[in-house]
Length: 260
Length: 332
Image (cartoon, each protein chain N blue to C red):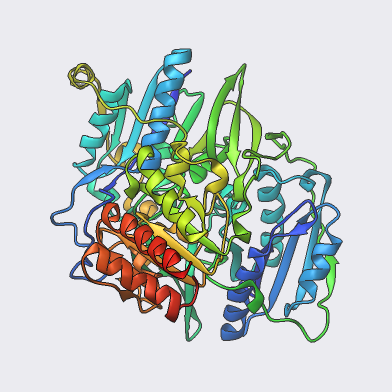
C-alpha cells in the first residue's frame, strides 16, 4: 500500500507565544519547532499500515528550510522518501487553499492508495488543507478518523462524531483521510532509523517546478491583527502554601460561590 | 452581485442540531449589520419538522433541499447539493456551525466553488459594509482578526459555544418554507455508511452531576489519578477527564469532557492539571463556577476560571482533600 503523508512543522506546543512587532503574527525568535501533533499521528498510522501491508510511505511538507528537520524525523521513523516544497514564493501561501494547490500539484504524478493528513494544524488550525487536496484531486475523503482498515480496493475507517458517537464508513481507494490525534501510540525514531534516514531522498520542489506563480499562491484570507484574547472573566488567584491555598479555596467555594 | 446570507442548518435523523441556532445568532447579527436578507437551508429527507422549527426564527426564508441521496449525510451528497444551492442563490456569506459534520464537507464545498472558507470563528465585526472574522490560533492562545480578500460567496463557520443558541431571535411570523430544486442524478456517492454507535456504554451521565473534578495531562501517570479520585469522593463529586487521559485508557471514555466527549455545565468544575485547550473548554465553559489548578500561570484554562491556584497539583490536591475531610469531620 502506498501512502502519502502531508505534514507541517509548527511552533512547539509549549512555546511561549508573544505577538510580533507588526502585530499580525507571533514573534518567531526563540521558538522551537516540531511536527504538528495530528500530522505525527497520521505519519504513525501510515507507518503501521506499511508494516502490515508493505508498500511505500512518502511524506510531503510545504515549509521553510527548518521544515527539513521534521521531514528528517519522518524519514528516521520509517518513511521512505520525502518531497519538500521549499521556495520563498511559498512564504505567502498562508491560507489552506494556496498550500493545497501546491501539494496537489506536487502529487500529480505520484501513485498512492491513501493520502493521510492531520485533521488540523496546531498553529492556524484551519482544518482544510487535506479536504481541499481531496477536492482538487477528485478523491473521496473522510475526516476525524480514529481507525483505518484497508480492504480490497477500498478502505474502511472509523469516524469520530460528537458526544462519544462513532461511525464506520467505507471509501474506494485512492482516498484521503484526515487523522485524529490519539489514533495510535507514537513511536520514537531509533538510532538505526536516524542513520538510515541520511540516505533517503528529500526532493526539493520549487513553485516554478509545479507551474505555479506567486499570483496563484496568494492568500484569500489575511490576518489584520493578532492579539491576546481579552479575558471576559476576572480570575481570583489564590496564593499561599498548598495547605493555606487549599483552605482559602474551600472557604471561597463554601461561602462566596456557595457550591459546596 | 452576491446578495444575502445563507445559513446552513444541520440535522440528524430529523432532529435539528442546536449549534445551528448558535450560528444563526451570528448570521442574524451579520444580516442586521449589513442589511442583507437571511435565508436558511436544511438538507436531508423528511425534514419538514426541522424546517418548521427554523421558520419560527427571525429568517426571511427557509429552503428545504431534499433528495434520496441526502437521506444520510455524506460529503459527496452535501457538497453536490449545496454547490447547486449556493450557485443559484449567490449569497455574500454562507454561515455554518463548526461541527464535525461541517468540518467533513464544507472545505470541499468551498474548494469546489473556488471560494474561501474562514473556519472556527469566535466572532465577527462589521465596519461599513465589510465583515471581518475573529478566529483563534495556537489552540485558543491568540486571537486574530481576519479579512477576506477574495470574491464572495464567503463561507464562515462559528465555533460551538461562541454564541448561545437561546439568543437566536424568534420571528414575528413563520418564515416561508419552500422546496429548493436540485438535481443529483449524476452525483456518485462514494461513501458507504454503517450505523452510528456509541462506544462507551454511557454508564455515567456527567451532564447531571452538580460537582465535577476533572483531571488532565498534568496528572502524569495512571497511578496518580487515585489522588484525584480521593478528592472527588471527599467532595461528593464525579470524576471526569480531558481527552488524552481517556485515549490512554487511564479513565473510561464516558468520563471524557470536550468536543468529542460530554458537554457539562455543573455548579462546580474543578480542573486539575488541565491546560484548557479549546477542544476541552467547549465541553465545560458554561459551568457555573470554574476552579483551575495548574502549575503554568499562562495556561488558557485560567482565562475562563473563576478561581485559580498556580501551583503543584501534587501538593494542592491532597491539601484540598485534607481540608474538605477536616471540615466534614468538624461538622459531625
